[in-house]
Image (cartoon, rainbow, N blue to C red):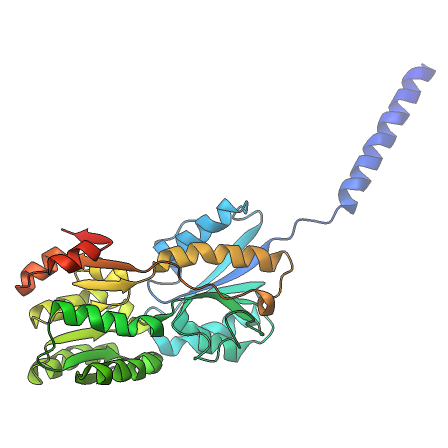
Length: 331
């Protein structure tokens, strides 16, 4: 009887100690990761599985590092839905929540920099982060922003060169750009002057102006077109590719999504891969690293994609020398 009572007392004491220990353990922190996308709707880029290849790549990267959605982190996703004027409002929303870190595409970065100097920001692809004033240098960002660069400025000359190989610029090369691409436009001007080529500026402020820009290119008898990627243009990729085909304008793009949408040719880094690599920056920041001390990564590989179906529709024969250099040829 006494032994039974003693066992019950010991068991009760053990249970009490276990409960006390459990209550004394700090609960696991669930991080809130802000995500700013430029296309689709907020609902389509929210949750553990989205309709955005880019956001899914970020989530995959986090899974590869051991993070479980819902247990270790959740996302607070926002999207401009192709309207760049919405970025300041979206930035303010995420800062007000607040979130632990924000992962964002290039066009959203100026608004985020304006909205916060304390919340860490991981960029998935800025055209020229130093030139745009986002970081002090690639090696030492110096503020609350780090991540990946597209180095778009460095590839403008190469894209013009490839376009010239495909369609000799007997007339002006039309350049489709918006205010986000001002630095790229200025770089293109310098590169064209060095080659003795003429450029036709087609600056766009709203998607409704795209058809008019193509009409202006045809009226000016432009021989080809250079399109700079942006939040505004990326959402209109299929529309832009179709207008280029209709106007029989060989066009060069900076991202593969345009070629996949029917465009002729692109040269640039893999943006979806950049989103996956952004997860490594998120991981380091959540573990205590400061963005100011995390060097900005530059692309190590640039892919040349050529769409033979688009070339055929334009009546173009791709030079064998260009085909041999292509990383991928779409039939």
